[in-house]
Length: 172
Image (cartoon, one colour):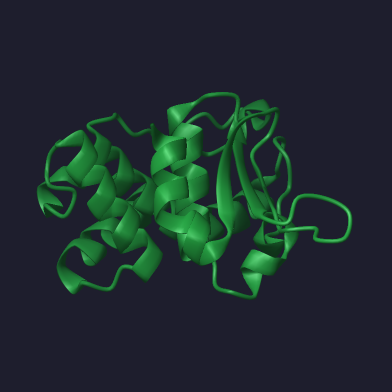
């Protein structure tokens, strides 16, 4: 259902498809000369939360970043040191806040991700957690969601008929 919804919303306008079943999540821009002529937003196996997270990144990425593999983001794999983890968390505030809003719209639970389990850090820092809360709450009252994020959030809320994702009370 999520794959079909994403395609219905964004394939014609942005030539992007949501693809399930990847070993690792990744965004791959179109390779007109040597591969598919559409952009691929691949999420891990068939995990709903992975799809929502990747969609959040895509909704936030500007036109230039959508031409780069994985949006050109810096990524250090699991096992990051404290400084690297701090950089990771700074880059993840908006995507995780938006993923949380998408999760609320779908009636799904949401878990902040530190994505750094082998370092022994299994829970997010208090600062990161509060920053994600603050961002979600800001979007609830500011009407400042990026256009694609607003489109996706509205469609999810309509299809899943869950709680109002713009109710600040969800984000504590």
